[in-house]
Length: 209
Image (cartoon, rainbow, N blue to C red; front, top):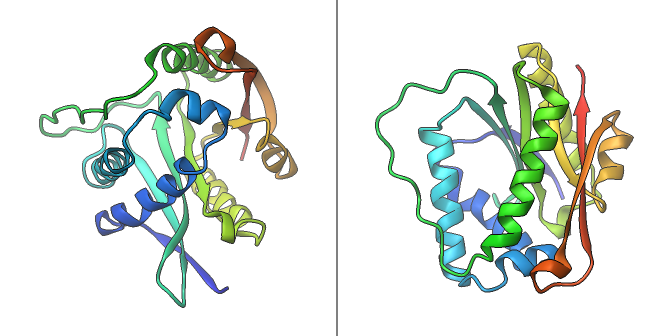
């Protein structure tokens, strides 16, 4: 399956949203707890709107890279880097994109508070790049695409002379560590407090370039 890695444009928003949507349709217990009540079509529309804004008029500088099947032209994966602790872009007034109904707000709020605190403890006030998205459709996983996208992210970070920060679930942390990332924090959410079962754990990771 030949795949080409290249820059993204606004026209790629539907294809990028489809990658996130495919992952959302196959949820782990955490995703199901937080977003399982959201209407599928509304979620897809929301994902595309958010990505289109990031591609055309982002609040902060961003960089995207996509993986595209050369035979079908399908976008099968992508990664996104967002500049943190830098001045926001100058842009026109942008109304907030409304979220679909059905979000389970309490665990989401708990998660984002802990995630933000871990990021601030690890990175402080200095500029860095946040690897906000790294997704590959399941049929294309374990074929080196993640490594290729991460190589692009590392090269981009080196060109900016900035470290990269990311969050990874327990299922994904081995991939990052294999590529030289180091753990700089850890946090968890007790899903039992919000109607689920078990504990959702993420590691905060950082890579110097």
